[in-house]
Length: 237
Ligand code: NAD
Image 1 (cartoon, rainbow, N blue to C red):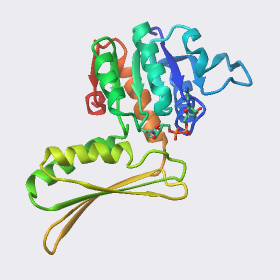
Image 2: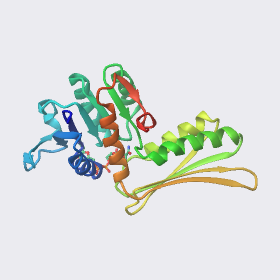
Image 3: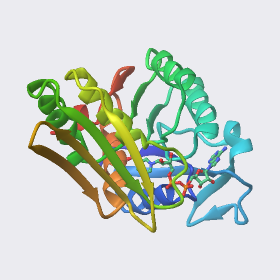
Image 4: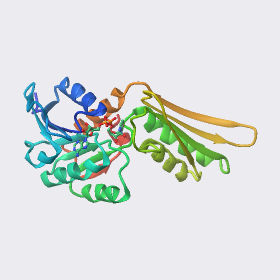
């Protein structure tokens, strides 16, 4: 068997970080080199995996690739650490600003990375459908309605903005609406409205494991790739 990929999990105590931990722990391709959360962990080692606080990022053991589902204020730290160590980065952290996006592009000259607002296969396909609809229906109104659980901080969601970018590529000018309610994992409706007719393209995520599995898959796919910025669609098939 080949040497396992040494994985660092950043944002490890969050909803997504916990799902990534569980899925990666069951995947023989990986060895979890360490996990990082915001504050100092109560227990330093769990099942042989060392735990670190964000302030200790520089002290984590060697790793080949990091998976990051944290918050924008934590993003610069993990990006910088991956560049410093020449490790790959898979990040699903949303709400990052223009300077952070520029830093991602700059880092992609040094390390392989995938940043995506949504790691689901269905949403990767939805991007293509939205761009096609926008291209083929010039002059129709385009509205994007996204719904998430009440704990989600950024709005519109990163996925809504990425879908909006696909609509703009097709020539539409999207408007956004955001709902925060209960425990909704994630829903995106892209609506094209003409005179007397309407098309609704909807994606509903019912289990956040789809995002965690997509990120773990991307981390295995990144291993050994040259520096560059890759999309989720690149990691498929
Ligand atoms: P969450 O609030 O449950 O978890 C955030 C985690 O980040 C917490 O564990 C927190 O301790 C950690 N954190 C905060 N500051 C940190 C720091 N300085 N260093 C290290 N860790 C730090 O949120 P969540 O629901 O798990 O979502 C996390 C992120 O992933 C959000 O940006 C969310 O929008 C995004 N998300 C992306 C996808 C996708 O497919 N790309 C899917 C779901 C969620």
